[in-house]
Length: 440
Image (cartoon, rainbow, N blue to C red; front, top):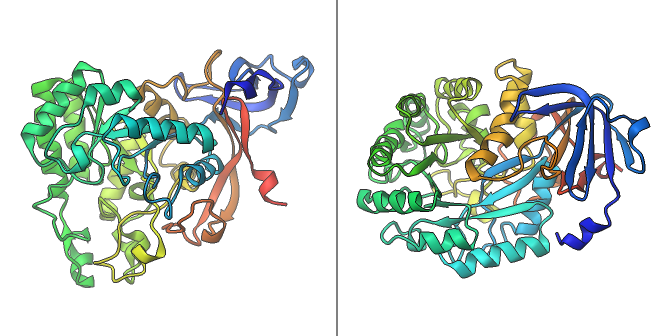
């Protein structure tokens, strides 16, 4: 997206909307004016009669909110373009109301070098419909042995640091990463799984795994790593974010760390909020993920954590896998599910069930990730970027994998009936998705 496009943008007035700004708790009827890629004004005074020369869009009372910010997207580019590219991921994102995606460093080659951070930023600028920020590797090649050049990567535009889908088992290296990241105010995002406790685990350890004859990964593999990391945060003062938690015990650990005033936050994936180990059924590999889908008790704990605000962020954990990775016996199949396009609609299940307030849900999908990553978006405010989503809360629809915009179709929501979806998505004031256009 080049600035020259913005110079000639016609102003747009979105009128007769229900404005929800989760960063301030605003929830009221009104309108919003977009000029030159930013929010020029908003409030009850913006109506069709007061729109001036702006193009008027009547929102018919629907929810207008900040665009979603997805902190965990495996995009495939460079090296794995057959699964997904930044262009296809961004189209899926726009259709899901996601206006910013944060790409994980699991690419080929790994994003552990300034040149690769630069490549992602350029490639996104040239091909992506939405904002793209790369997360860089915290260790070279994601091997967990040698720390990357955190300062240089941060300066080049890496928005955070991660070890991808592998836990950093070496406590000394992890301590160094947290200490260095602290010097730059950088966020460390860690995958939690003690590699020695769950080396062969392919699903949640317990009765269901035993019945299916599959090796289990216990919750303890997650909690042991989380406990260790929090001790290292105490030592270093580094900003720490648990990339995904999946068990009640992990939620308790995060709660107590926050009560002690440590700079600790966490996310949960939409899969762990809406699905459980029973959904695996007859060895369905689209339900194989890392961390694995847990018990219903753990799933309910994750929902409670979002409702109480103890879980800060909801991510899609979007991980495209081709048929060659998924059409295998469960134990050998690749883990991961696509999720950008279904993120908002699946999250709305929790709102429709009365489990999580709409404002709280939207906060975990926009305002919270924006604050953690230091982004100016994720809010409805004068001068903020016009990254917006207009949401139909109630229309039912069925997920048909072949219509998904991702290159890979490995959705756990295949044939699921969902309620509500994005109608319009704006990125920097430009309309990048219109639901009505797709229906013709």
